[in-house]
Picture 1 (cartoon, helix red, strand yellow):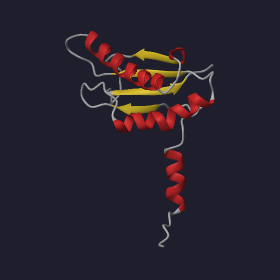
Picture 2 (cartoon, helix red, strand yellow):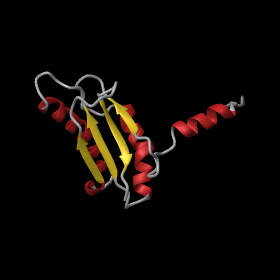
Picture 3 (cartoon, helix red, strand yellow):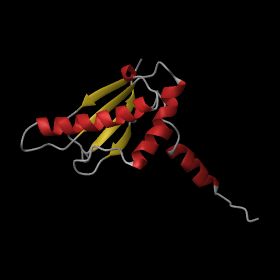
Amino acid sequence: MPKIIVPLFFTITFLLIFSPLRADDSKPLTLRYDGESTVLSTEQAGMLDNLILPSLQKDASSRLEIRGFAPADVRGQSTPRRLSLSRALAVAEHLKKAGIEDNRLLIFPMGGGVPDETENKVELRFSAK
């Protein structure tokens, strides 16, 4: 039977990239969206299941900030705010279906016009206790 040899560099890189987000991490996990999409993709759901859910399940007192973003709109602020809220709620709903209580999920619809090169996103960060 042939053996598969994985170089140590790739093993360490995989563990660093795909290790769960911890409550003491300062950098948020970012889920990117295309256009006006508000639906979680299979890849995004997998990221939540593998990178966020383990930490929430391990520490029942941890809380997660879910910040939704959308691009500015010439029609006004309500469209980007609704879009960013819908994205954040989709993430929260996925985590609630996995058994996380909604009082541990802090939702912030940031709307549009936030200075950033990628406004179509949701950022996840553990909140200070």
